[in-house]
Length: 194
Image (cartoon, rainbow, N blue to C red; front, side, top):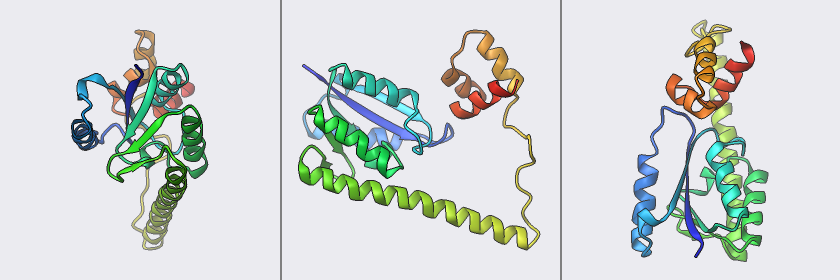
């Protein structure tokens, strides 16, 4: 029997996935799926790219025939990009996967589900762009008022040398990110700089 996979994503290491886990667990119990029988995939990465460790692992399990259903808290956890999200859903649906969004109460397996997915993914991308526009406008207003200091060029949350030392001890990028309290992408950037 194929496994049910749960995919959870938060954008940064400082964010907590507990709320998503709670809602997904309620859905699992309500649908007669024991929460300890599913596979959990959790990323602490941006939704702007599909290059995420747990997502890549999930994709491998799906295309290896190990997963029969994917449950997400909201569809935008898969992607904040319309094209990426639609491509992923189409690939999964063509494999016969059941894809469910818990909070949106939608099963994306059929034709209507695919149409709704396109709309929801488009809204997610629009929200992301709107958030960036507001941030840019706020920064511009602060600059005009002489209040914006920004982050000094070259400043980091941690030291790139520490990332290199942890890599030398055998830690992978995700483990280093957790140890330093930064994203995996930041670790990659740190390691490229030293």
